[in-house]
Length: 109
Image 1 (cartoon, rainbow, N blue to C red):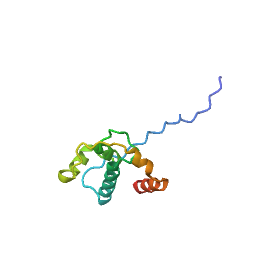
Image 2 (spheres, rainbow, N blue to C red):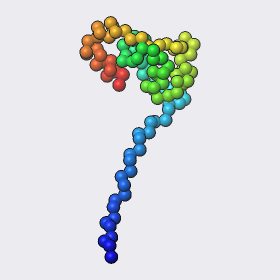
Image 3 (cartoon, rainbow, N blue to C red):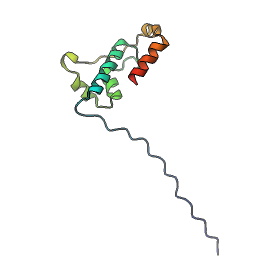
Image 4 (cartoon, one colour):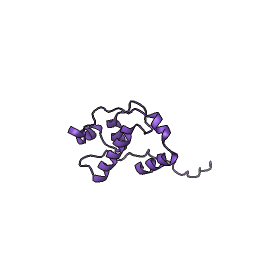
């Protein structure tokens, strides 16, 4: 009789792609609000490594992992962010020292 093949281990299952955390919803935490305000400050200063034309609403929604409408609802009235668009300020960026750049990166991470 023909030889019986050795049992083979089950084929390796490809790891599932990392699932993104569900989008944040509802009430803002004080930490989230403080972080958003700092991001807005840096965005308006034009010192972030973003593409010109990026909207503040889109930028915040990506970093805060929430729907852009949540950003719009939060920033209404006098705090309205409207359609603010990023414009890189190259001259200002070039005047920053490596220590200043590193400090900002650390504070935002």
